[in-house]
Length: 301
Image (cartoon, rainbow, N blue to C red):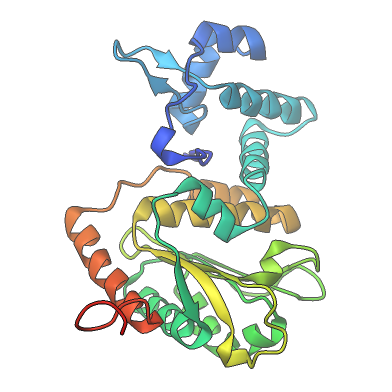
């Protein structure tokens, strides 16, 4: 069974605007009520909220998604293919930036200002943990430049062997499905990804991500002195958001992977545990010290 889902913008208000009844959605989309219930049970689409009395409630965005499924199905696609393409299209609508998308959907995440050396250390640590613990993850990496990817290509080739699918973004000449598990996505010159750094390891047993935006005006700086604004998380819900945004961008360039990624990233993960949040707090403080925003003994002197 393939289950589909769409990222909800603003997870803190996921139920906001979920006011439409199932009969109203049926009227607007032309899908019978029994059909809506069957799609939900079999495919996980749509995914309604529930009122205090247990009744299904839908958002305007749910209607838009269902109408897109109907349109694609009418064009000759199977139902599962129409759903996969509609979900991917909705993922792309979150924007062309992984960093901005994660920040918008999870506004409580702290932004750290780190130089490349520290950011690289965080990224390497996540890569190592992903390689050592994650079982068949979806792995996504944004490298800005092809030369940066080539410097890590051997390392990523090793990581890809244990991954379900590996997607890398850089200024490649073209997007392509390479032999093996790596998909290369060419980033256009005007894309925000040209200024972004990202690593996403989406796995049930070892989720982690880091995404960063390079501050402008650093063309004259040495490469190792470049400064980034950084978000990171090991919360499964944040990681899934980052993976879905990256998947939407990837499937726009290589549609052949649409159903594979949509199915793999469909379910809503459980939130991070209290122990995970405590461990995250320690890492947050560590990053503060490494970035120079905290000093032993109190305020800077």
